[in-house]
Length: 120
Image (cartoon, rainbow, N blue to C red):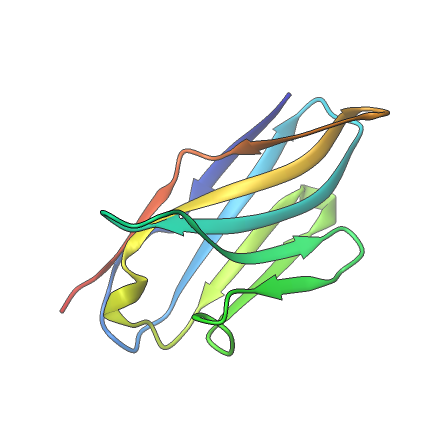
């Protein structure tokens, strides 16, 4: 079972930047991908960025060019740099891990979420 601990959320001014991190710990065979989704009040959860173990990335159109996802494989930690923040980026950001707890079994976990709020 993998546990996820997120950090780095907070209040940010429009146009500002913020960096979130998500550390995975626990017992597992391998991690396939890690990423971030967000959920704003009254809206469906939206996948915003994902990074596969091979290095390929995927971004929602709404954040392309502004958000960057990266990963430290040695620390099993994924980072998301958010630049040029907009009011519509206000949401709870949840980390996700897609992993193999053992060979042949694949599952995923969600973190507890980190609130990012536009201060305007």
